[in-house]
Length: 180
Image 1 (cartoon, rainbow, N blue to C red):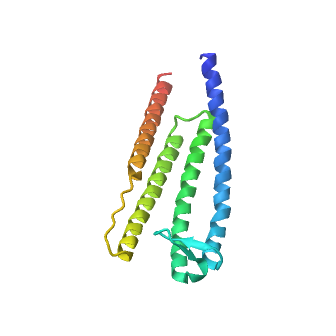
Image 2 (spheres, rainbow, N blue to C red):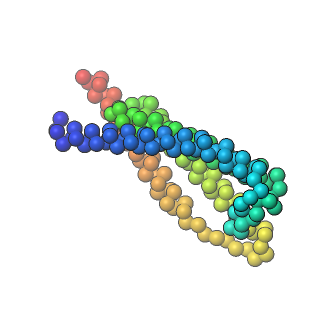
Image 3 (cartoon, one colour):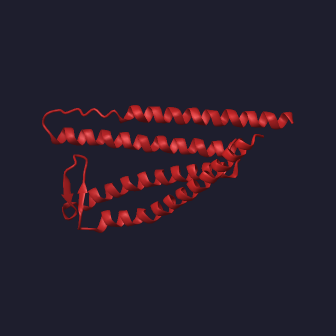
């Protein structure tokens, strides 16, 4: 193997270790922040909440039912984010070990992609709820156009191409092991 390729592989492994440690820190931070945010939403009378229309509302004026709804919304989002980080972290662990073309790594990549799609679906659902909320609140019908979905489609399309490349690499790796 070429010496330059060895150096490149070593740099990829080293960067993957740093990314793995960063993702581990993010995971622990989310685990700590989740209950703190839920407690703040449910119990605090200080501060302000910003709802869909962007108008701040004093926390003291928000009743228990909307607080429970916000806590459930936050919990679902953070659960999906933790799942995404967990699977991506395990994929990066395979990178740092230099063992990327295997079934376990591809399984983690596929699960991370699905969790990313679920988070995006959750985001689109919140945009639809936002639109209905604003429409029922105002008398003229205002249809906002948000083109973020185009960027999301390109991102998830790219992620699927990378997943398929990993699957092809895994198949080629298995075939080369059978040949040897």
